[in-house]
Length: 146
Image 1: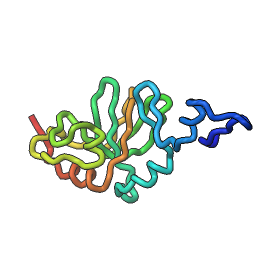
Image 2: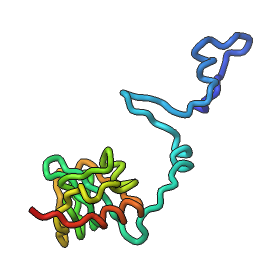
Image 3: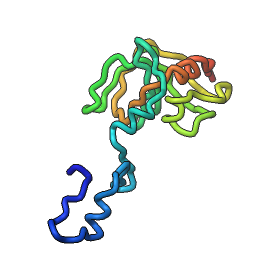
Image 4: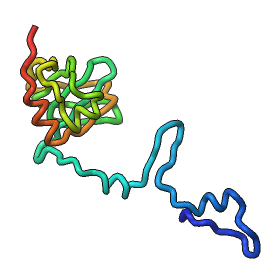
């Protein structure tokens, strides 16, 4: 469908047909808003880490991790991270999404334990690519120890 009304010749468009003549910039399905790919591409001004695929991974029961994505089989809920830190507690970001885009505004309040050289994660339910700004911020959080 092109988004334009294909009215019957010789008749006035009905209410539904008039509504279809409008340009559709977003659609909501089950409470989730979707927009055209072109709109997303225009808004995507975040710079991402060059030469490294730095991500935040959320698992069903293992928690959240920050590190370099080495491999993944997301259809099976699996991922392997290099130099990974568990995000045990964070402050200065409202969500993991904000943490991945902006980093933390309160690094001294975050509790990220020591990085492990490699970790295999199961039950992966979310992988969020990190911006350059977020990578610098998250890598700057001091190691938390008990």
